[in-house]
Image (cartoon, rainbow, N blue to C red; front, side, top):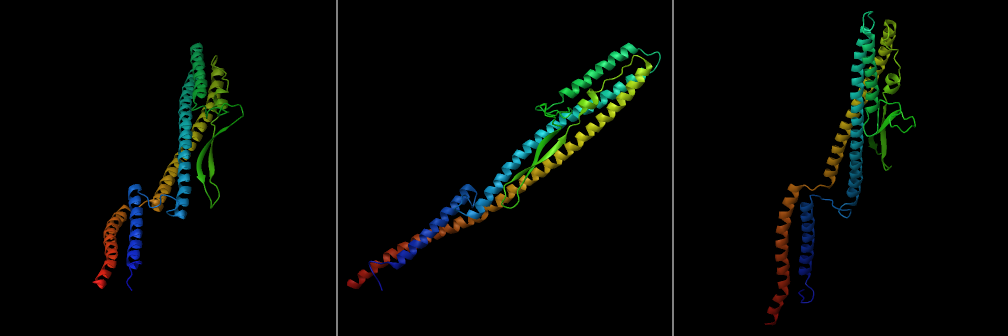
Length: 282
């Protein structure tokens, strides 16, 4: 039945054209933003997952900063510890020379005193951002803090909130084992022999402290590399969830543009159909 009031064909063509226009708008949005999922209304589940992952990536960026700070503090302390080792070795050579009866004890003692003061200065000055891993109290706050805490990662299990995992970097404590030792001196050959033994003890402690710092530095380096790779993996995962496939979007855009043109023509034809009723009254 033909009617001049109700045009079913035009309604079908109009609904089809609306659907095409809606899909076309979504595709154009994906192309312009580069994302298939821009907001919760696009895909609530995927959007919520991506936001949680983005939060983790932001947290890992903060972890990278913490690790970088820790690495710098260890690097400064390691440089100081290695210089202390070399200085003690020089002091041992002086102590050996002072064990000869014809040695210039006064001059050797002067050099020994100067180098001991240099050791004290190295330990006191090996700090980064207020943290000194050669001191007994690493932060100088007087609370007896014997290690530096570095945030090493963030962990998330199920729906629970993310928690931070920390790494404790122990102090080499050369303040006690090097600067805290009072040397006998080199006034006599006997004193020089005692001083050599004391320097040997100091050297052992300095080498042990430098090795400990090296171990901590390697751990932070490895953790930093892991966190960087983990952050990249999460970023890639977010992209897989929400990023648009630009090749597919381009092909879809062209198809929808063609469908839009055909839909307009179909609606035009449907709107002209009632005019054929005029021929019935001629």
